[in-house]
Amino acid sequence: MVERTAEDAGERMLVPDAPEPLVPAGALLALLVVDGLLLGAFGLVFTPLYTNGIPVPMGAVLSMLLLPWLVRRAGEIDGRPAVASAPLTAWVVAVVVLGLFGPGGDAMLAANWQSLLLLVGGIGVGLWAVRAVLEQSYREQAHRERSGG
Image (cartoon, rainbow, N blue to C red):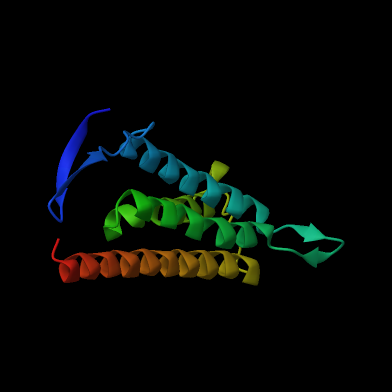
């Protein structure tokens, strides 16, 4: 590990370099995008489930729980909106393409409340997470400007 010196109030102190990440940021972002695609596909498959005759949209619930996490992790890689929203974009593409033009030409996105919950809930929580990433990025930028660095 290479160490460099920093002047702090006239004293010399050693400051270690930041450790190198084990996995490149591009690979992590690609993995999050693939996760977004898979989450969209599984969400679409598990949304019309019934338990003892009661509709239980587990795909919508699963998507609404996991999609914000994917977006927030992408925002940790890079706070730009396009990068942070990459898993959300992949999720929307998977749901729309598989839902409207599914395997064998079947429409997997039925015209019912479960499908509406999947679309509105998934896009809503995804946009909420993108907003949270942007707010965090703006706060960090304002803090850097105030501290003069």
